[in-house]
Length: 210
Image 1 (cartoon, one colour):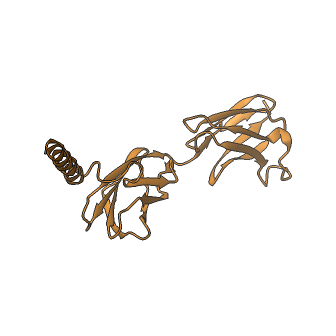
Image 2 (cartoon, rainbow, N blue to C red):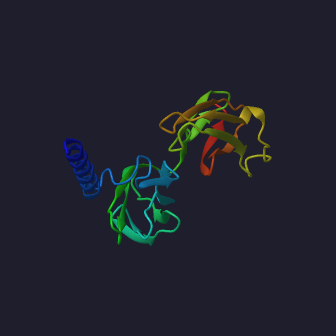
């Protein structure tokens, strides 16, 4: 009789724990199966578009995505759902939030989106020939290769092909910035183009005899 009482008591305790876990909504799903939201690309550039993807969505649930004061409700399929959003026009950080709806268990998931300004390349407006000057690149993707090329503009002499001396390539740092030094002997107006993966920025510099 004592053994039967202990078994019955243990069964009741286990059942109560399971009911509590489901009601609480925290331990209802095994580890690694909770709702998760990701954003690509991330970092993103102001004004561009990003795609939010929710995974581990329970069957029959809709997903409400909220990003920068805009919400979209999407039906899930095969355990996932996605939505496209435009990135805000101010650099900084934004939060993508996903929430399940129209299903038994309501789950939430959020991720931080880094928003960078538009790609920029800055060079002095006027530089003496044979004098070293610095070109600064910013707002490019962190830790990616960026090429800076100088091409002499038409109307300031013959159009120059980009030579090794007028093209450099370096990796940006964690903040998406990099600087490169140039020294040009031939006077003229040069187009300065900074090019990275899916990013581009241009400016110009005038080389004069001093």
